[in-house]
Length: 276
Image (cartoon, rainbow, N blue to C red):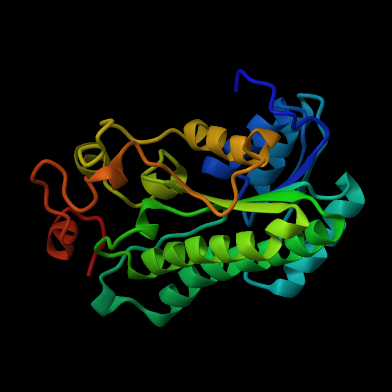
C-alpha cells in the first residue's frame, strides 16, 4: 500500500476470501500484519490462501460455512473469535453471478444469487456487527458493484442483489455509527477475477467490458483491495455509509454502451454471454 494503515494486530474476516477480490484483500491485510479469517465454499482455495498468509508470519484461519444461513454464520464467527481474537473488521466479498435473460431466469437462480449476495452479506454483517457494537469499535466493507447503480441485461438478480447491498450498507452505517462501527461499500466494475472469466467469452471481456470502461481495461483485484484496506483503516475514520466506486470511470457515463457497442439482451445472447 505504501502507507502505514495501522492494521497490524487487527483481526479481519473475509467471506469469499479464496479467490478474486477477497483473496487479494486477505493477502494485502496479511502484508499489513493483520490476522485473517477466510470463509469460502472453495475449501482448497481457502487453505492455499491461508498457507500463503502463514508464510508471511501472520496468523490465518480457513473456515467453510453457508453465508445464506444465519445459524452457520454465527457459529463460524464464534469459532473465528476463539482462535484469532475479537473481530476488528469484515469484508463481505462472497458473491455469485448466473447471467440469464429475465424472461428465462429460473427461481432457483434468483434465490441463489439473492441468497449469497444480499442475504449472505446481511447475515455476515449482523453476526460480526453484534460483536463490534458491543465492543464499541469495528469497520465493515461490503462489496457492491456498478450494477448497484443501474440495469444490465441478463443480470436482474445480480443488479437487485447489489443495489440491496448498498441500501443495507447505508442503513447499518446509520444504526451502528454511534457505536463506533463504520460500514462502507465499494462498487467495482468488471474485475479480472475467476467469476468474470468463468463462462464469458474472451472476446466479450476484451472487446466489450474493456471498451465500456474509460480507463480501457478491467480492474485488477489488488486495485479494489487497496480501497478495502483504506476503508478498514483509521485513515477512513470519518468515512461511514459511503459507496466508493472503483470502476475505472464506468459510472461516470459509460454504463449501458461503450463506443457504439450494444449491451441489449439480444446482443449479449448473440455474443455467447448467456444461452437460451
